[in-house]
Length: 136
Image (cartoon, rainbow, N blue to C red):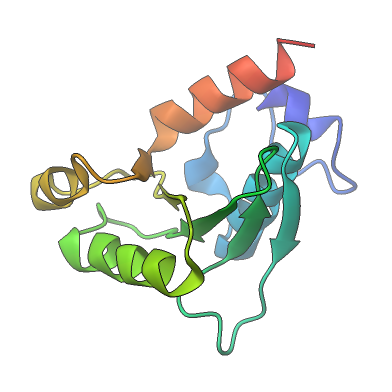
């Protein structure tokens, strides 16, 4: 996350921290910034009427993708994965990203299998950062 530190006004993340230490709002901001760096058109949604979507994306192929961030003190469960899937259907999104630095329950992982949902835990956030900031 050190690369992100250099690209934020507040420098929210130090080299030795994980996304677990970000506030919920900072996690959403970080996700939006990372997708923008990856070439997506990015729009953060407001709190009300967002249908559980924190970041609305248009990918390089001009398709809709959705991001939901959960900064919880425990793993995210199956109901949240199902909610994202419903929001994807409503928005006609081709992919959903569920960010949860503290991980996912086994039921959530099982439910997401074979669906166009990417479960992004702290380790996956690190891999996204590595591939995005070190490809340049």
